Image (cartoon, rainbow, N blue to C red; front, top):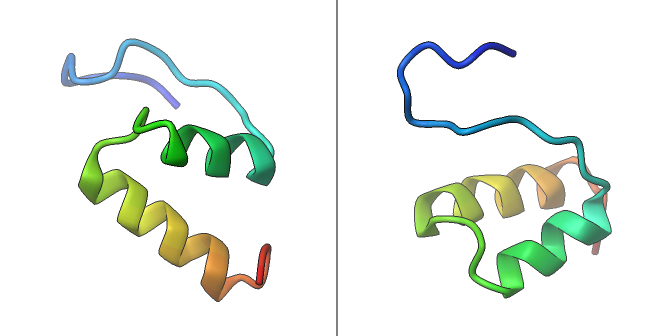
Length: 47
């Protein structure tokens, strides 16, 4: 991915456990946390 609009400082790859931990630590915006959690649940990555 390439940042074109200046809203993102970088991209990193995380496993599901790290994503969940960062969501719980409020490191995601509310809207990004909801969309990401929905994706993880719909793809049966966690129950």
